[in-house]
Every structure is written in C-alpha cells, then in structure tokens.
Image (cartoon, rainbow, N blue to C red; front, top):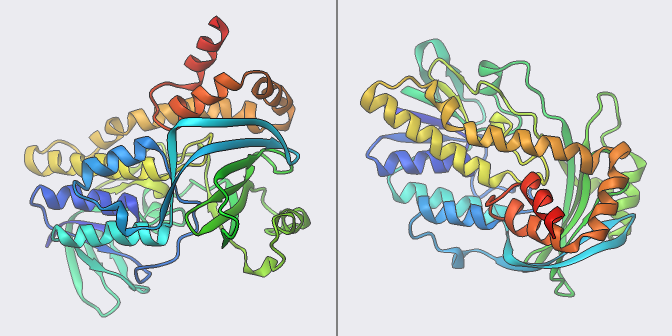
Length: 366
C-alpha cells in the first residue's frame, strides 16, 4: 500500500508527491504518457512561481533547461501597440517538456515511483485501489487527481464542472532573437493572443471562450496564425483551459483535486503553473495532517481558500478586460496609465504582492 497515489505527472502532482516524499511518506505517480512528453503551454514562470519552486525543490538546477528571462512586454490592440513596459521582475520563459521532466526526475530522486505510459489504468474508488495496465494492483490511502483539464478523477469528484476556454499554440524557431512578450487583446472572444519568445523558440497562440457548437478552428484563427508567419494550420495544437471557473469543492471521500484538474488557473492571465504547484503543496500538507493527526481531508478546502479568493477577484476584473462591452474602457485606461500597468505586471501578476483593486486605488492617489 502507498500513502498517496497521484494521477498526473505535471507540476501539481509532482509537487504534491515531492512534499510527501520529503516527509517520509510513500507515493507513486501514474500518467498516461511517457516522459519527457510534449506539453501545450507558453511556459512562463512568474517570480512567485520561481520562489515556490525553490521552496519545494531545494536544489533544483534551472541550468539544465533552456530558459530565458524577459523584461520587455508589449500590450496591443488590433495589432497596434498600446503600451510598452520594462518590468523589474523578469518573466522566465521555459520549455515545458524539459521543465516537467526535470521536476519528475527530482521526484524520483527523493524516492518517488513513477508509472508512466499507463494508457489503460483503472481506478476502483470504493476499494481504494489502482489497477495498472498490466494488471498490477496498488492500494492507496489517499488519491490526488492532478491529471489536468481533461481529468478522469474530476468526473468522480465533480461531474458538473467544465472548461470554458479553448487555446491553440504553435512553436516556431526564434531566428531573430526576439526578446519581448507581446499580448494582443483584439480579435479574440473574451481572451487574447500571444507571442512569447523563449531561448530558441517562440510560442505563438491564442485563447478565447468556447461556445458550444462553434468551430474549433474558425477562419479568424487561420488569419491570425498566418499573420504570425504560420501557414500550416493543421500543425497547430489545441487544448481546453478555464479562466476563473474552478471546482468549488475539490474533494470527495479520500480523493483531492489539484491544479488544472481543479480548474485553478489565473482568471486574468491564464497562468496555471503557480496555482498548480501551490495547490499540490497544500494537498500534501492536508494529507500529512490527516495521516498524522486525523484532521479531516475537507480541511483542504480551507487550505486553498486563498487561491479561490484570488481567483474570484481576478474574475471580476477579467470581465472589464475581456468582455467587448467593457473592453474599450479598459484599453483606454491602459493607454493613459502606463505606470499603473507596469505596477500591475510587477506586483499583481508576477508576485501577487498586491491586487488589481489596490493598484487602481493607488493609481488614483497619484
């Protein structure tokens, strides 16, 4: 028997497993894919993400990864620049395939067991047993669902939850050594498009609210990617995510949801790595309290209360930035108040040292 079985080998699951392993508990990770595996993600680490990574992975060597620190950011509307900023807190662009694999290697280093390539595993919830593809049975005390936006585990915990945003992305070589993150708010329904340069490649993509029945690759997507120098529309990959729509009660019996499986994504920016790592950490601390002091696993809801509170705040301002009826007001505000935007980029996004409401109130005082 293991203390915790973790479904999913991304940052959320690996972080939960690493904390538990460090405390002497026995865990294993199960994933359908074989690592290293390709991951659709722009791969931006904010300061808060880097700080929590160093807290959990004490001697993690970023030098093993292709990465780049970006200080320049441009915001656009209809492909026209509405603001240029040089931020104090660099946004670190990494390759998610490399990044996730390095975290998984670290988890193995502290004693974690990984069963990847398990395409036909089965979860027997009423018996607390995982059956692997080869028939091997693994009894567990607690199960963590860290299996992403298309989570199998979530269907057991919360059947009604659904993702709301559809994203597409393509990586192209960084031939000209671009060094500026570019975000364009126009032409996308309730979302934005991006061009994010890494060390040797550029992530080009877009994300917008998905309406049932809409085509997954409408003509405007083709026009956008062609404007970015990408003509092979069939090579572009897509995935569902969610902005602000989280699972209110991410626990049932001895099963907890973390990261994307719990819908924990920044409702303003779409950043998911920080919430993934932090929710994985809080899930592991909840499990430790449960196993050592019989604290109910439902305490996990209170532990991630700060994440839910932050997401609720973000959801309010999300409407002003992305809803067409309000967007023109927000775009005008961005144009007129560059110092406010820079403080938001440094303090409300990169570090969470403050929030949008506090920055707007502070801006009115100047």
